Length: 341
Image (cartoon, rainbow, N blue to C red; front, side, top):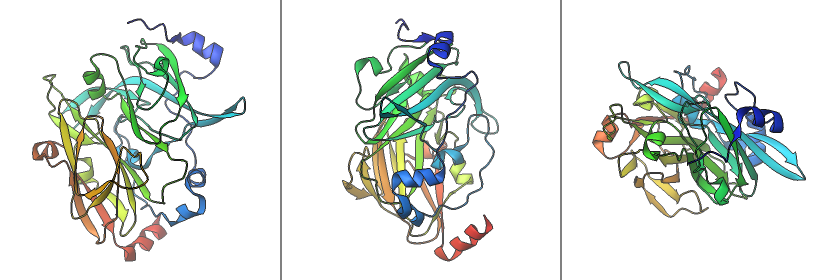
């Protein structure tokens, strides 16, 4: 398939002045700007523990992925707001454990790729540069015109622009759609795309968890699994949350080679907002089955302090790395943490 949808690297730099060589990310809004967008003063009610941010290990930093939402760069063109993002595909090597390394394709130097976020109805512009050595593309779930569907390959060293309106609101995803698609996704070219509803959801501590698998010996079976890129990471580095604080969990299953997995939360139940496309929950449960590319919003709060596991209920998948813990901090201890930060 030809890549005549793309522009050469030189042309896109001079004609559009959209990208700069060496770009690895985009502008991120400040916390104050974010709260203003999502509800203003009410978000002062949300408490987030001042967790220590471990240094990135190459393209992996699971602790950063948790609460890092990329709002792009706001521009005004012809009286309309454009929310612009830059995504650059490259190659990286990550450590799955102390003995096993794995070659991936990353986006903006990380796996999973940035969690992009916008409001329903906004104009979205994605500037995609491929520097990963093979042809790639970006396919966004949602509603858009055929020419923006991201199924045409973008050759190495070339760039393209995807532009569409953000619709409908919900939890979506994006991923490479170059054949074999399974391999390109499994090697790291994926991320979450959140479109917020016109009326903001209630204040909450918002967290992203993306389930993925790694086929390290090319037998079309996963040998390792992970939340947010690294097997077992959240077992060794529990996710800190506050007692009685509403948690809004954005969960995506991007595990290739397994037809479905479950998500189970210990000692609690969660409200399910399927695909994030509703403002009222469809059910309350503690185990949810998810097919490949399925994603939901899960809301819950923990009544008691302590450490609580989360994992797929397929034990083999959990034991191979897709397992973590929430560390619920007692209300009486929350002020101590804030004062130390």
